[in-house]
Image (cartoon, rainbow, N blue to C red; front, side):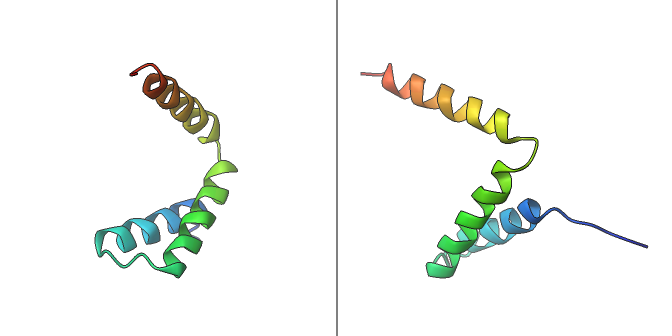
Length: 63
């Protein structure tokens, strides 16, 4: 049986485990960067962009 897993999912799980165990070091920063890179190339990228833009606008209006 062939089983494929997205690189974004793998890096996301690795990053979550590193954050949970508080073991974020230089390698954790690399994993975070790779997770962001692979997440940007998935179909969810427009939704993430929209959410981040909305969050930035909401924070800007808090003053």
